[in-house]
Image (cartoon, rainbow, N blue to C red; front, side, top):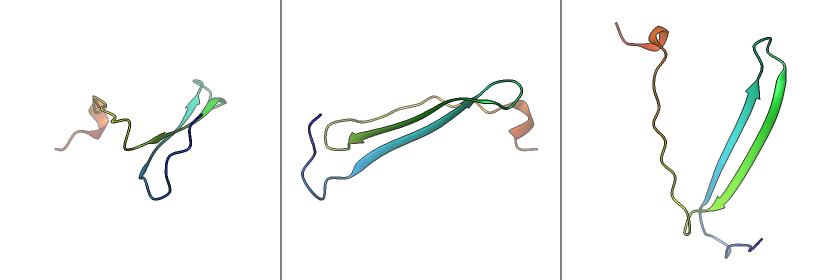
Length: 52
């Protein structure tokens, strides 16, 4: 793993995945140098989160 130069922005994604009963199945902590990577996600709202 290459360490980015001091002062380079850090992209950090933390995610906790749980099972149907709420049990934690996975904890993921991903860190990337922002001068090398960009991230894009498509997010879809659950119907319960829609604006009235």
